Length: 280
Image (cartoon, helix red, strand yellow):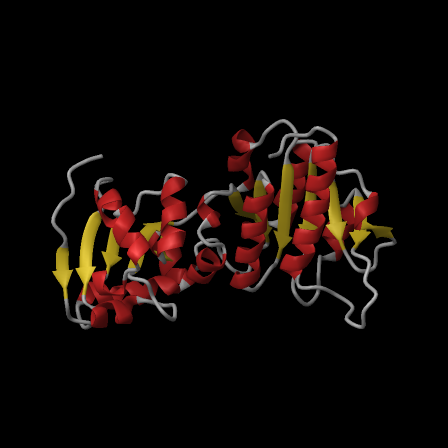
């Protein structure tokens, strides 16, 4: 660990550096700068464990909990060569985007991968999740938490409406957007990439006759879920090797997309463990 430099101290909410931080909540700014925000102790700790090195850490000791102070996260980050900026409570409130901030806000590189970049990251028998056109950052983040917990090998956003660097996606994922291999690409490129790698596609759609438990997931497989309102596009459904539905007996005709993804992913994990496929 390197030498920790003394922090720059900013007390005014009107400071230009503080006022510039909320601009990274805009997708255009994130894409122009190639950077995004991680806010929160737990999210930042997980990102660090995944190898992320922040460019700048803005922190407020007055807001930190005892765990953060005990484990010395500021010193850990400073030892990476990251610039440290200590903010007053008022200045941090100006920069923060979440309710009840805990005093940590880091500027990091955004995740910018395409399907082609994922090829070298895949194991021999991959489990892939494809999220087509998902609009809500909270749903995308929730799917990443499931992917991280279940050991999914890759998550691909096909024709994404939101981006992996959206601070609300980062927050909803609890930082797992940095620990799970993710990519963004068009649906056409995604389908070509799956075919090129011999990965069969299972499409989740309420119109399917086959239950999600009646498909074999023990080999290489990709599971696709669609938008919150319209589901998967006809083109993706037509390209799928299997079309499955989650049996439902209630009055609602569909589940939240992140919930649907979790149900099917864990069915795949169950089968793969029973079949001796890699998994903890």
